[in-house]
Length: 212
Image 1 (cartoon, rainbow, N blue to C red):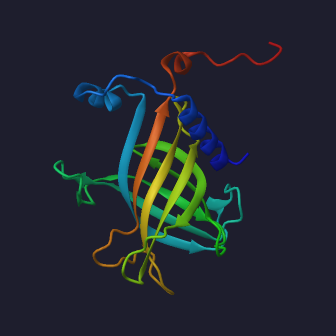
Image 2: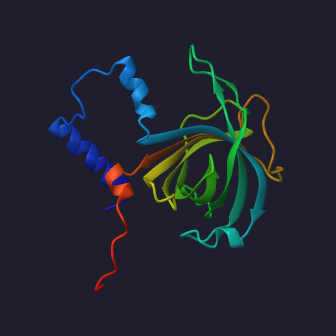
C-alpha cells in the first residue's frame, strides 16, 4: 500500500470510529501548552535559492532516484502580524539551509525531491515529491506548487517529522538561480514539524546486540 493510500485509510477509520484525542474544548492555556510541552516542535521559514547545478552531483548521490538537478536554499525566519497572521517580514534571521535534489520532470507526474539540511542547527534528510497547484498566479512568469517531504536522519531524540512547502517559483529559460518576480515571495514558505520521542523511550539505553 502506498504512503498516500495508507494515510487515507487512517483518516477513514478514524472518521468511522469517531476517534477524538480529547472530548474537552481547548482553552487559552491548552493552546499555549501545545508548543511549550516540547513534544512537537514547529518551524516556519522562507527559502531563497542561491545555487543551481544541473546533472548528477555528489551531494545528490544518496537520492533514491536519478537526480538531474541540485539546488541550494538559504532559510530565513519570518515575522507575522499578530492581528491577522499576515507575513510582514520575510527576511528576519538566517536559520539554516538545505540542498535539494530533483528527478526528471515528467508531464502529469509528481516531481521527485530529496533534500538534506539543517534548521535551527537540527540536521535532517527528507524524501518526497512536488506537485503543481490548480490555482496559479495571474502572471505567467511564476508557477505555484507544493512539496511534501517525510523526514529522516534526525537526532536520536526525535521520532520523525515532515516538511511542507507553499511555493511560488519563477519560470522561464536561462533564469539566474536567484531570480525572483517583484511582488511574489520566491521561492517557498515552509512548515517543518518535528515530533520528539516519549520521555521513557528517549532515555532508554540502546538494545543489547543479539546473542550477547
